[in-house]
Image 1 (cartoon, one colour):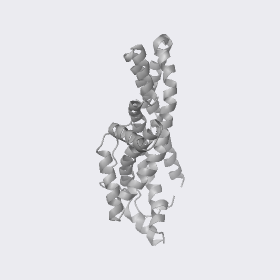
Image 2: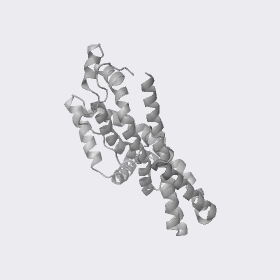
Image 3: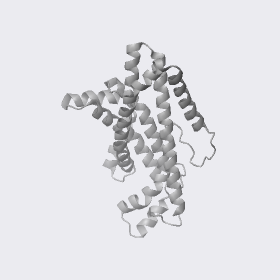
Image 4: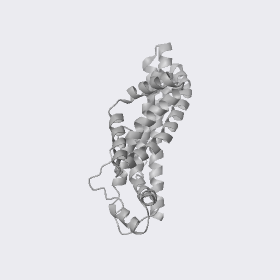
Length: 271
C-alpha cells in the first residue's frame, strides 16, 4: 500500500457508509469473552445440541437432512461473493467517474437494482435466461445475487473511496502517478480499512438471502427444511433447526470479518 504522508487518511466528513441487515460485526478490539456475539453463538450451539441429543427424533433427523443444504448454501454464497465484489468495485468507480456516460450507466444500474426486490430479480433472471439459454438454477441464482449485491456494494466502495482525503490524490499525482495508479496503489488500499466491515456485512446479508433461491427448488438450507416439513408436517421443528443453522453460520461469518479487520489494522500499524 502506498501511503502519502502528511494528509488525513480517513477524513470521512459527511460521508457515511450504510450498514444493511446483516449481523453486527464484532468489534476487533473487544477482548472480553462475554459479548453479545459470544452469547448468541454459544446459546445457538447449546440449543441446537440439546435438541439433537435429547430429541434426536425429529431434531437430529432434521439436522442430518439439512447438511447437504449447508454445502449448497456455502457454494452459492462463495460464488456470488466472487462476482459481486468486483462488480461492486466497478460500479463504485463508475459512480465517481468524470465520464458522464459511465457515471450515468453505473448510477442507473444502482437505482434500478435497488428499486426491485431480490426475490423478483431471482424470478426474472431465472425465467428470462431460461427463455434464451439453458442454464441451471445455480447459475441463475449466482447471477441474481451478484447483480443485486453488486449494486449495494457499489455504494459501499463509492463511499469508502470518497472517505479518503482528496489530498492523498493530489499528493500522488504530484509524485507522477497517473489516475489508474493513484486509485489502485494509493486510494483503494487505504479505503479498504473503511470498506471491509460494510462489505463483510453485505456478504453476511447475502448468505441469509440465499434462502430466497429455494423458490427455484435449489436444495439449499431453506429448501431442505421446507421439504422435510412438507413430508413430516413438523413445520415448527424444521424451521427451528433452519433458524439455528442460519444463525450459527452468520455469526461465524461475522467473526471471520472481524478477524480480517483486526489483521488489516495490525499490518497497518506495523507499517
